[in-house]
Image 1 (cartoon, rainbow, N blue to C red):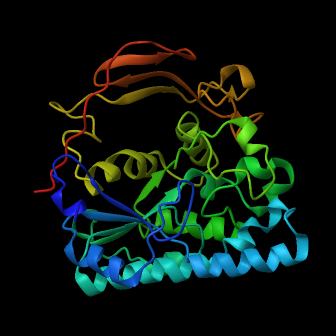
Image 2 (cartoon, rainbow, N blue to C red; image 1 turned 90 degrees about the vertical axis):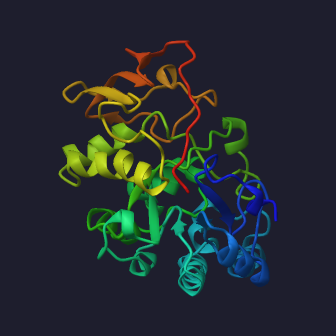
Image 3 (cartoon, helix red, strand yellow; image 1 turned 135 degrees about the vertical axis):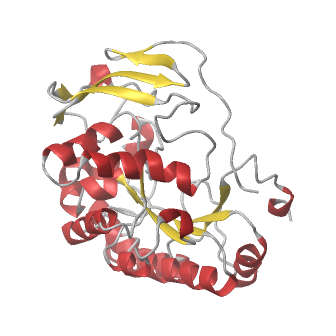
Length: 315
């Protein structure tokens, strides 16, 4: 009822946690989900993991390890099955009710088969997102990164990572995002069950994408499409996502030949850490402009109010 009172010009959509994550906002009741998908006129964005599967897997590994479950079990607890069951249900509900659905944080190759690339984005009713961490890391990285790369949905196999990249490139997956969640180091250094899922990715997301370009995995045009144009189209954001006369000037200046090493000293997030710490990116960001005002230059944030409210063409 509260959702239906929302002015669609003020929001880009409604987020539904079909699997529990940080914040305990789970919605998995069948009647409630049918009401949302049948009545909400806006985009419905879903976090998809099947709760019953996660609970069963959790109990299985608790029986083996007690409370000291290794972080390496995270992709087995929040498994491919859990993701696919929930994502396929969301797609089924969207098709049943004719809803606009956007499935967030695709983490398995299997899920990519749920989406197609036959229509241009503006005509699609069912769309999907890939996150930087699911395109970059794999389960092999848990050995060195530990709970610092604990995300929901979990980082999974190298096969999954490559399958997600393939779906990004062939337009089954429409946008690339960060799922930015800057928990503190103290929180992340907890044991498996106590460490929150999520990490800070906004600062280094473009640099990661430019590494994909430098390594021949993605073109510059694809980066711009997936990280700028398509989010603006998908969420119907007014006057953003392109460098055009009359649009808000949101852009970055990049030096493609100036390597940038992530160190503790140049991390800008208040949480003070990054899963990329120690990595040297091939390019560096020289300056960032928001609404036509420079807000970042040569490694430092320029303190000035440049933000503006986003407006949406949802009518």
